[in-house]
Amino acid sequence: MRKQPAKDGVGQLVLQIVFPEGRTSHGTEETQENGPEASSAPPAARSQPERKRKWYSLIDKVYTLSNLQQAWQQVAANGGAPGSDGMTIAKFGATADQRLEQLAADLRAKTYRPQPVRRVFIPKAGGGQRPLGIPSVRDRIVQQALRQILEPLFEAKFSSRSHGFRPEKGCATALSVVDRAVKHGYQWVVDADLQAFFDTVDHRKLIAALNEEIADGSVLNLVTRILKAGVWLPETASVEPTELGTPQGGPLSPLLANVYWHHFDTRMVQAGYGLVRYADDFVLFAKSEDEAVAALTLARQVLEAELGLRLHPEKTRVVSVAHGFEFLGFHYYRDPKTDQLRKEVRPKSVRRFREAIRARTPRLKNQRKPKARRLTPARLAKNQALRRMIADLNRFLRGWHWYFKAVWSPYATPFRNFDGFVRGRVRAAITGRVGPGWWNQRLPNALLRELGLIPSEEWHREYLSGQLAAPARKG
Image (cartoon, rainbow, N blue to C red; front, top):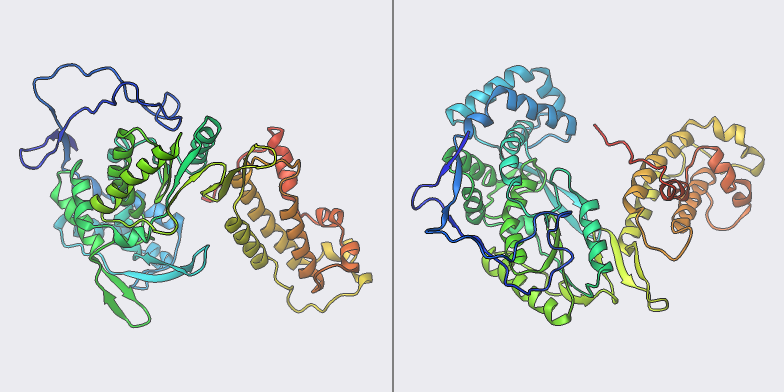
């Protein structure tokens, strides 16, 4: 695998772009702590532009047996449902060695053809349903194998403003940049919302973006086949062609999304705007309303005219930090009474929390409404269904608190209301009763803690004292 100068007519000439002197420096621009900062010094004189170099001979790295085996191990660890062929992880694993050897041979001979993805729908946080495309196990392995080879090549060029689905980055790093921006004088925000990003990706533009780094036609053709594999609709047993979009649900989809977004990242950074992006969710920061309006104008030009995407006309807006905006589950605003910045769990995330708790606290099966005298610590401690419920709640609450721990609240106990809701649901699951009543006195907070239910406030005290470590990740 080597990077060679692009041939005439295939490659792309790259010029060093220098910001004009005197441009306002944005706190969310790359710095020594957040990536490279563009220099205002003039570049050294050159007789001609530097020619961009590309990567050749990649397909043989994709289908090596060791790469496919590594991809299979990742796919198996992730689990998941079967695709349109019905093949499960367990069934594939029973003869994995033979299947991987055949897959390598098919890729080498260029006879591999991806199957249509199986469409399923999952609930959206704001209501409605989101379509997912589930590739077959075999196709997931190929996508993962591609990702393992391509991701390091594109990571070298991605902007530090991009935080979604990248090594060593994530929601926490994106929110950290937002925190610094609102604390350091950025009073205006472009709060953007994109319509159906994964359904509107232009295949031609995406392949062209890949071609900026990759000159291996076999790899580009393989990605094209994956994009155009179609969608199998179980309800009609028919295949719907895919002329636009990249289905969510495959291992390659996040990388392809970041490749597609890179043009937007570059344009906004070159213009000097403070950008923070996580997947298709982004905000732009400015120090004046006029600057924010100009940032939105450029963003609309790049996204709609150049990339063929659509900003939501009603949900995309220019707003002051004081008025408030939402990003990655948090609501940022300035308290009108104290003029202090606040960062709280947004209302939609509160609703999702309550739905998740309700799902984990059903009425215990085959249990009559117990009388008060039967609700003793000894009896409750022996209830296996209750123990499983509390263990499940603790796992959920541990991860949920870790994500939302960095709130800016005027209250010493910012998670008290969340804990109260959880306890109320556990009491309802045990007794079949809700609201005020004797069961609240019979099942006090201390007894629920004795039974093992750990409140978020307890996690939060440990976090504030520096004693709380990150929860263990699956796998």
